[in-house]
Image (cartoon, rainbow, N blue to C red; front, side, top):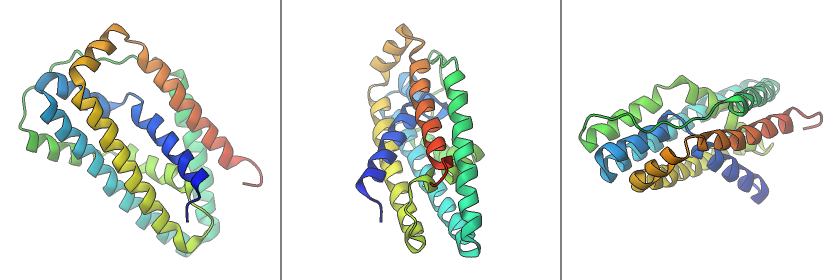
Length: 208
């Protein structure tokens, strides 16, 4: 199963990535500013559950791949490492400006929740990211890989729910703070980009 060091690294990387400005957490923030905490928390919950669906898809796909060829599974992990490096470099080069001034029309929290789930599930970038990101933290015990990935996925969902929930709960004051510091996203991108590049290099290093 997962060792404490591997699990700690996963949690640290996940938190950095979840905090990095992107369509999902910016939507939660702007929805909270426009409509209040309940709407923001509905969006946060929807995005979190959508990530659980992506986890299940990744488990099914990678488990089938491992069953057919351990070598091919290792190749997917190596390609995934390269993909993480590519995303990390893009983050390091990003301007990272956070914009929260766009007004959103009022929508019922239940509809926001359902729309957030669907939007997350239908995002192909999230699916590709999960396939590249999660296998980097599983151990070599092939029989336990699906269970390890399920555990990582549940931890990721909880972290998304907690962090997005905090963003939504404090949306008003957080939005005002970010408007006074529009380049905060640049530093968040740098931190997450550095982590992704390091993970990719760690995987691609000879002997890993």
